[in-house]
Length: 274
Image (tube, rainbow, N blue to C red; front, side):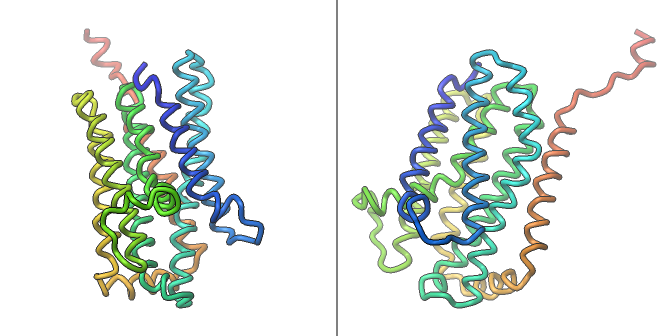
């Protein structure tokens, strides 16, 4: 089976997630917005799903692998709801002009999560479409944790390895520096995986496209004044509407990806003529 050490890779992402969000989420005693909990639970569940799926298939527990694969039909739309919940929270804080930081960085965070959501939809659709091609199927699924790796790793850079921020911007832009650097490192890692098997490297090219798009747009977003009014307008849409849209997008991608990967039905007339 491909990606023999895939579960260790996802485990590493999980460890970085815990380290990056320990101080700002896991160790926090005071109440947190519900959006944080929705996103945290669904994102951690997704990482756990990938770990168990990788272990199951490599240990030839095919029935468990299939059962968990079917469970992802529910988990994935919920994951998209979690993404939208974070976008909504950032937008609400921007509309309320909660802080100088959010007024500068809010649109960047919003557009970054929109790009991440689009990336996940694309990767999961292709994972289902190519589920009969094991290397592509595994690659598209294992690529998903790379899309938001910048979120915890940028915090790790800021707290533990600040020397890695070689850009050195001041103020809120410093956060965008660490996100940019994280995404560039992810793109380099994905490109290395692509070079190992170019014939089945499409998942890593898709990943490179989305993380570099995310890096560039998030870094330059503070210099794009038109994003502010757009983000404010989004923030005035009822959250129930946008979260329902996120769930429907996840459901649609799951359905159409599954249908696209189904075996074509044989034509009885043609079969009989043979």
